[in-house]
Image 1: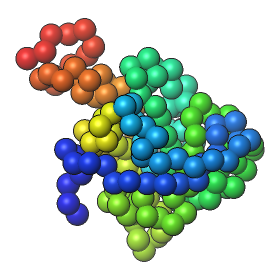
Image 2: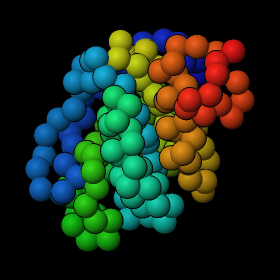
Image 3: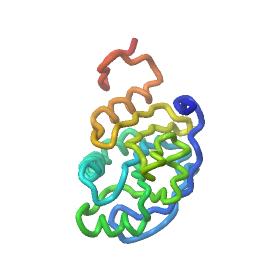
Image 4: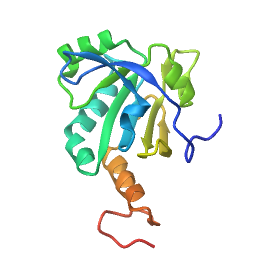
Length: 173
């Protein structure tokens, strides 16, 4: 697989359900032009680790918005499955959930587990010009850290050299 960091993000056009589980729409990469995007893929609705991540990012979405970023969750389930999950076990979230039912986005972002038809836990930070600045890919059983995602996003936004464990407000190298 070719590296993605530092390159233009692969385009996508996916059906979504809003975080309230009431309205369907579509989302494209172009919709985020001029904004930072934190896009994270998860394997499947109605599973065990996935709701912990989705609700964790949802609780902190205002922190992402404060630094000029939008959040988008994606799985290979349909938008109808997302809606059913939101309206049952998952509950309301503060960002849309996109359907990669064709698995095209998962494939283009290099996280598709083809023999299982699901995506690994891939997270991508895309800058306002549509360039991928960060990616992390986890095994299916391990959830991601919201704090680390925010830390990296803030570090990227400085445009400077950030040492290990850099935190907002600290000196750059």
